[in-house]
Length: 336
Ligand code: UDP
Image (cartoon, rainbow, N blue to C red; front, side, top):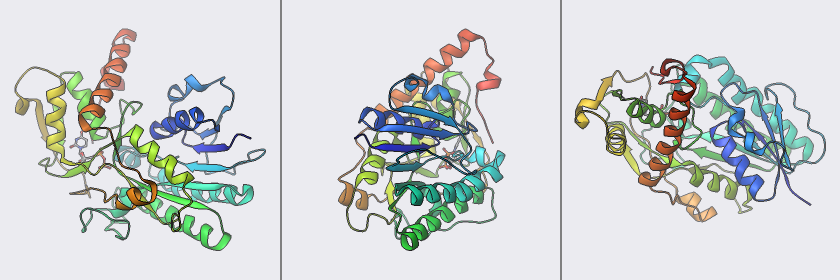
């Protein structure tokens, strides 16, 4: 009998890649998404296929799912710093109330649940690289607090359901991930830089660009999620970092993007510096020894290859937009 997986946020960037992966590996896939930041375009190629169901639903409300359920992947949440500034209450609600609802459903169905947590639980880290044992440095009342604290609460709630109700749980701490199906107006560094370069605009580097991130291509990430969900290793309920440990400064990312998308002017002339957002972490890099040991997982897609594939996706979106005559303002860049 086919295993059944429910994916909340399945119409979003990472969620839709998970739909493809699980469906292609023979799972029945059911998506719950309220389409606040997700888009049905990301999954419409799966519509009408046997074993795929989409339900428009806000997971902060009671969830009823008929029949058997083996796995739940809780990926519903705004995930770009710009989104949590615009949607602070929804971000808190889906991390807190939504996680409560899906854990209740997992208990009811005897299903295993994987929580999409985040490197943001480490805040502006005082330990580098970040290991799962690090408790973090988060400002609870800053603009990013709505996401960081919701995810920290979600982790606490997940462990409580595991310990007190015996629900089988997994917690993935996901570091910066990029790739096709990110929104043009997502606002995060990779889509912003690529879209700015494609439009012949200057790339907006915040601060002096010396802050670092470690970017993981989405196909690597979803393979890690699959392995974490299906692993039965002792201690697997404790959080596992998933990300690419190749660290770079944001200025370096901007320069790489410029090199891959030719335009007018020297590299330096194609960059404009803007103020650093409040509480922007200065460094971020995962220690992935736990994932390597428990899951035999590490990223395999290089930054070069990942950026190439992402640029090609955005170029297509850009061409379609130009053809349909929609303005760059409507679907262009979102700065702070
Ligand atoms: N950033 C930037 N220019 C942009 C968008 C983001 O310099 O147009 C910086 C941002 O300040 C941060 C890093 O890129 O230091 C990563 O930001 P992103 O929004 O992608 O995600 P975060 O890692 O902060 O959650």
